[in-house]
Structure formats: structure tokens, C-alpha cells
Image 1 (cartoon, rainbow, N blue to C red):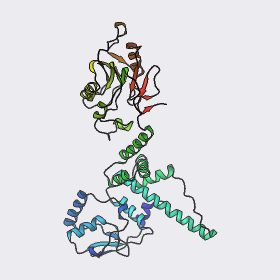
Image 2 (image 1 turned 45 degrees about the horizontal axis):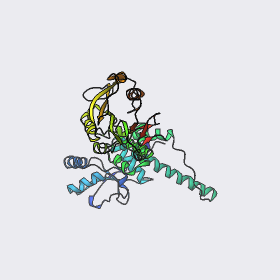
Image 3 (image 1 turned 180 degrees about the horizontal axis):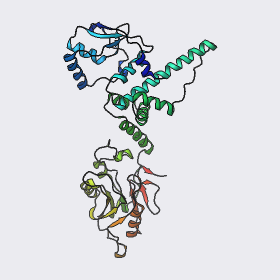
Length: 381
């Protein structure tokens, strides 16, 4: 079935002239994204200069099926007559969606959304046809089962929308999960891939849950990799795509359970070094040194493509530096892991420096390392 070709193959009725004030907007016009203010103004200016080039499409009662923007412009300009065609489609909403897909300059995300809605309408109509056939045949009211929505359906929607299968998949994800985001997608203010990323993020956050209370006691060594906010949570590279982040003020306000004399190992982000120093001070420590992790590949960046990450060392009170034989080089090499994952080698070096102190990892993820305590909302039970 090719609905677009079916529409194009229909015999076009003759054009007529009608008074704009006699025409009525369709009650289901909201299924089609409205023109933005800028688009509506551009259309109004074009009609003022050249007139209406494409007739409005109406049903027999004078209700507009296609051309609500043109009708609005005609009313604003005070036009006395507009060209129209009277149509009698089998289903008006299907006709409206197809007309929008054929005529409107929509984004791929918007076209995918309209094609999904069109597919659902067609499935509903097919279900009604099957039910009617069953009623006629069996005089029963059972509902026929619709075909499963598999890859074939998605490919058909992608072809109808002239959009990629991934765009269709993202639009469908958003439509099923978040009506508010879906309306933004349809309006053209949010592309499908970013809307779907927000849906997936919300699902991940729901699985992570809240962090437990901080552990009791005072620890001599703290090791922390805070969930820094980098400024643009909608970026494809934003940490928010992987885990919840915290504003700097909340990180600084964390009542860390440090002993009166303690040492802190704090991972810093290259673009947020001043903020890392603020955290060190807010937690009651004083910067002493740093250790550079040299990675096996470069990452994304604006000024440079960084291959290193800094681990700051800070002291509280009179906590001593490591014994001379336990001191380590200020640089070590290790492979990258998953996003934000820190290398096993960092733990080993810290344990080499301070083998016999109480250790707490803050913002930990996964299983707790032997000989350590851990706190965070992703610590494995």
C-alpha cells in the first residue's frame, strides 16, 4: 500500500472561489504542526505579493483539510476570495496527514512523527475493516488482531516520511514515552535524536535511584570523581547522557566524612580546574600535588584534544605525605574504559602510597573494592 501515490493518483476536483470568512478550520487540525510565527509571516508576505498559489482543500461542509496557514494569512490580509478544491476523502485525518507530508517543508523528525500517526490511523482503519468483516461473517463482536509492528512497518514509515529508520525509531520512542517531548518534536523545536536521548536518560536515572546516606565514621583517605556539569546537558558528549550530574554548589556542600587529618584524591575535568580547587577548599583540604593519567587515545575537545586527566592530591590537617619508598611518579599510563570510568591502576597507586589507612570512595560505581568503603547512587549491592 502506497498512501502517497494513492493521494497523487486521485482525480483533482476543479478549483472554485470561496469567501475566507465562510471557511472553518478542521477540528483535528492540531495533528498537523502549526507554522511558526516566522513561517506564517513569510507566507502572509508571499500571498500579499503573489496571491494564493495552491488552492485550499475543503470537505463539502466548507471545513479546511489542507491550507490552514493560507486561510489564516487570507483572513489577516482581508482577501475577499480564495481558490479552493472540494474533496471527499475516505478518511479526513489521513488526507490531512498525507497532504502535510507532501506539501509542508517539515524536518525529518516532524515527517517521521506525522508518518507514525498516519500509520496508526491506517492500522485503526484496518482493524475496523476486519471487525466489520468478522461481524458480517460470524455476527460476532470479536476484534481482529493487528499485525505486529516490526521492521517492515518501520521501513514503510521511513519511506513514507522520507526519513531514516533511526529517526523513525527515535520519534516512536518519544511518542510512546513522553507526550510533552513529542509535541516539541512535532512542532520542530526538538529533533528526534535529542528527544529520544532525553527519554533514555530519564529511564536510566529512574533505574539509578537516589544515593544512600553517607557512611558513618571518619575516613583518613577520600577518593572522589564528582559528577561534574560541563555546561550543555543536551550535547551528544554530555555526561548527563550516562548518569545524573550535580551543580558545583551541591558538590561543594557535600558533608564529606573526613578525619581531622586526612588526604583527598580528587579527579578534575580539564576545563573545570578552578572548580576543582573550589571543591578542595570547600571540603576542608589544601592542594598539594597532582597525578596525570595518560590515556591510550585522544578525546574530544575545543582548544585541544586531551590525552590526559588530572588527579589532584590535597591534605587536611597534618596528614603526612607517603613514605619515600611509597611515593609514585606523577604520571601513569592506562587504557580508557567506558565513559568516565577511571583505571584500575589509579586504585593500585593510591594503595601503594597509603596501604594502611581507612579509605572511602565517593560517587563510586559498581562493586566496592576490597579494603575500601564506597558511597554513591550506582554502588552495586
